[in-house]
Length: 230
Image 1 (tube, rainbow, N blue to C red):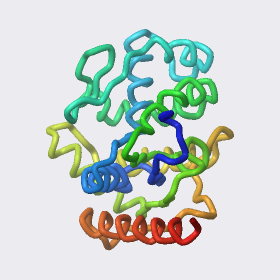
Image 2: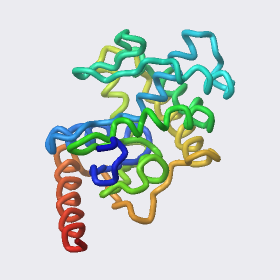
Image 3: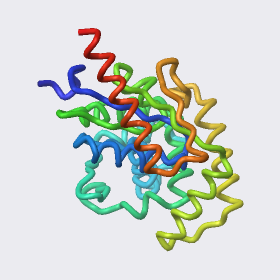
């Protein structure tokens, strides 16, 4: 069976940075026994690889050419770039900012598309990002748009970084998130948006467990609708 077979279900979860979609998506994947794709990590990896190769984040052509030879893998909770563990390095505020800057380039997005498609393997996939529903997996069985207000997201990112012993400044995080939201929503290539099929999930007043339960319930509903159409 092809990894891109439409018979392999996909749950696509899109939303702005630090909205909690990664934690929710990973938990949903574990609950269902599905594979998990953190597409945001891919852009962080590109930003880090560019930095390591002295390529500026505004050089679209050089970035697009740099991506195909990279060896990227997710193993046992670790993110590997050319067999090196970069899990902590890509989570820094600098790489978060860099990810948003390299993601605006169509050359980078095109270079990563086939890699993202390769994660679609049986029994299913939960993918989170900015354009999982609108571009990468347009035939996803369930599409979720997960968000929270920017102050709440800044607070979550601040706590996440401090828990990882990474220096963090709340005001700078808030400023960077606002800038990133503007870039993500206004870029010409695959902007962040809620597709008409996507179910809206506001996590301002929901913890991770509650958000996971919401997605799992919506997935059950989608399965029932799918079975009724057969």
